Image 1 (tube, one colour):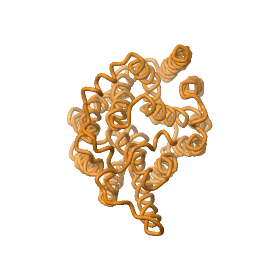
Image 2: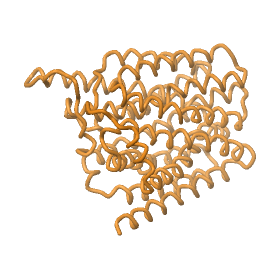
Image 3: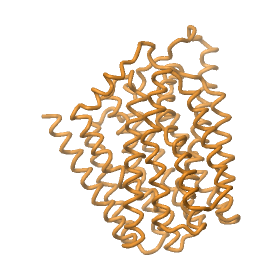
Image 4: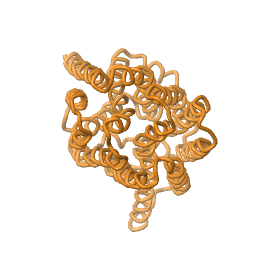
Length: 403
């Protein structure tokens, strides 16, 4: 992970040494880990149980698809806006506080209406504040590593733990209370995340003036455009699976607790892979690893298209380790090798736009009607085909770049 740790904290006093430095860095690592845990607790609610919440409010699969696409549509602008603002004003902490406060207001408004159009507008605003959190928190962890000496993966892993345990425990709770408790739980988790932002240090990148015209020239390079295009293909397939897994399980007769168990399995399975790649990932070529992850995505989606009992989703979810677990860390590592450090937040914002923005729009608007009218088999087979295309494309890019 050395390549991910090249940025330094700027504008601060001379770093403390000895026991005081260890104490300060230890506290900061703890705060970052708690923050990541709470952020991914909120995401577990949004990803795992908001579809069921809307389903129980009487919305169709197509309507749920619209809700899950209209949000990512606004995230295209939100990620660019907040990513460039972070680089320009050289602050992540203050922007993160604003994002959490905005999420808290928007999710609270879900109490006020069940009208589909109004809910779409609320979720659009919610995603405006929610989707930039991941790339900015990744930047915060990477920037903190110079002070804390902790690799990215050893802090990010607490996000996986938060997602895993929260998805499971919330599923058990909703089994007793019903999905009506989803919004109050989201308010609590987002509120705790907001409180944590006040306890974080505001790490900053290099103090030299950033030439954003250089950044836009950079992302017009053919090799970078091709990379983001391939990322978009595999991201669409992942977002199709992520947005409709809970709905699929509910239609197959699964309880909310089984849905929670499925998400627990996937999140827990990625933890050992994050550890392994955090320590040895630099020894492997990124593009072949991404090709392998995409191929395993295809296998995973094919299995989902064939099963008839929801219990089989549990072992299939364990494949999350060799799909998303490999994909997430490796795609980020490759991105840092092609985007200079001074454009770190902006580069990750573009990645987030592709990963959650464009992919979310396509998967929701196209995937929702396909799921509703043709069923889960056609839906997941389409996701499988996209993953196969991405796998082949990563390999072609690897060999053409090498030659």
